[in-house]
Image (cartoon, rainbow, N blue to C red; front, side, top):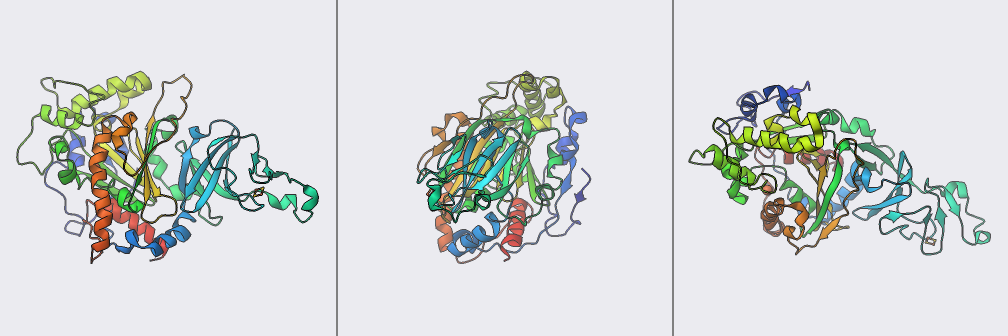
Length: 458
Ligand code: FES
Ligand SMILES: [Fe+2]
């Protein structure tokens, strides 16, 4: 990585928390030679301190703008490639009132059709499945998997339909990291230029060599950005997840952005600068393993080891089962820290071998309801067949994250996050000002709104 944009000292946005910086922690890694360049990369140009308009979260009119100028124009993740592994597999991807049918039309070809019959407009498919042709259930108009018109029922009655002109309209398709992206805008920039140098961050942690082992979607009674922004900073840890403080450098997180992506790195196995005492290495480890209990039960830190070196050693041991010798090339940092990326507008893959990926979007055409999805992307042992993708598990507004046991201990942390969010939406209705962001710790949220402004034009 070559980019290094750092603000001058004393510039707004250059202030940092007391305590060890993330770069200091990397210096003490027990495998310094394993620390990838991407963790040394820093890029944080201050984007100003202006408030974010409250209307972006509460106004129906702003939702209309997002529909017309964001979701109809932007590259967005529709599904994983393993969701449609076989020719004829179809997946319905809905965004606001638009519906797309993502189709594996050939072994190496994926198409995204507008999910509407060209006769009288019925959705071609309303559920995922496998089809050897795309036949409308209303009157039976039928298309081939490549979108060409296959059959007109009672063709004698449609002399005015030219089969060549009745190919299904398509959105553009791009793939990266095992994700399938679409863009409804024929004039949009190429997918590769939209990604920019984002793929360079993933060369050591290839996401295309993962499969979706869990997929949970929960509906929230809030604007989609309210939920998304709760997962873009560690500033809330002190108030929302106080049980983690002994083992998390919350306010020492590093925040970066460049192009269409941003990143936060929250170090674990290091004490929060909010604490008035110095926890032991064991206390730090136990606090970080509060989230990892499924993986690290009752570990005692050996003499001379630290919470981070112990998490690193345990992680290398566990990952060796799947990654083989490549596990030995991982640093403590990659096995300890929370490295959370955002690819604008709504895809949040976590770095290294943390298996979390989030996606956030409106629920149906609602400006005041949204969907948060948590996918676990796991590697699978080399030389074995890629396991099938887990089906989606829906949770309603009133369902608890612990109703999805496949999420493990993380469900309890999500419950803490989720508790605030409907109250945020309620509060926003009464708020008589705009949203104020921290200069540094809320970098990712400001970067998102900076890009959103470019799309919606305000
Ligand atoms: S609406 Fe599809 S065949 Fe009539
Ligand atoms: Fe949280």
